[in-house]
Length: 90
View: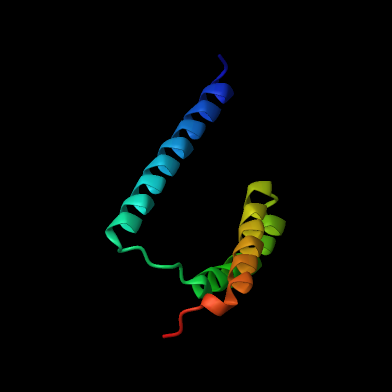
């Protein structure tokens, strides 16, 4: 096997293990009654931070991987705005 295939398999296994552990922890917290709803305002704030960071970094470095910051920023903004009624105010 080539090195790229091995790296992709390793990344896939890490994602699978992380997802499994996260699902287990969330289900355990729900059973114990300690589960709290997300603070969707935080998603909105993170989206505001990631969106303007990704574009200049992508343009200045030319690294297409940094465009992912912009995509994550757009996704976080959309999640935060869609659930605006569930924002927690401090």
